[in-house]
Image (cartoon, rainbow, N blue to C red; front, top):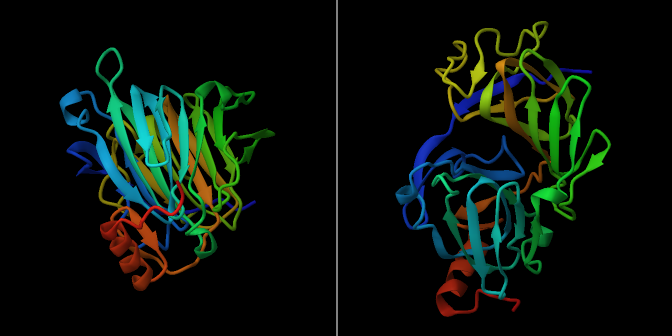
Length: 304
């Protein structure tokens, strides 16, 4: 077995999207090679309703899949196909935009006004860019959770892990999307196929993503959700830390004194050209121009 070294650690940066929603973006709208097949990852954690209630009014998507995972609060959604619903705590929506869809997402806080969730964009291969749009709305109760002997808990949203299979199926990038909790002081090895790109996103507690015998890993301090600095390889990490891994077939995490909770996401690279502007992702500039022309002249929606 080979431990995955760490390529980089970055902090999710404040940004504003939709009608004025304040959130944190860990990656997106840059070089997509290292995260392929993933394009963007947002953390919409907020305790001030004024910073998120304006939501994400009607907007288009084409050529991608969006994965929304809600931890606190609710997100009401509707689309040009007539679908509508509400995502609550623990729920997941996996939307395949395919050939084109118009939709809206309107967040609402819990009883204390708190909102927390994540959105990940996954690219579609050229052969499926213009596929029929579809939704997979998954209730939290339908997401399997497995607990190891040391107390490590894993919610399997997508893919297979420790004998459990997540409820999301038929996704082009064949991703694995895991919500993992490692108890305080525990050291855990987690398998990740060598052929996949992988990243971890810490959102509770603290921990150390390295192996003591691995000279290429992070060798001092911790990757933390509580503001602990990292080593000189990166400038600084803290709350909302994203760890990008290099190649290998397992990830090692050492939980801190509070334990650690993080998303571990991996997928097979598409290795295709990307032409991207806003919510539309195609393979060539010509395809991208055509999509925006169709949006303006009313021919964007191919399936109703």
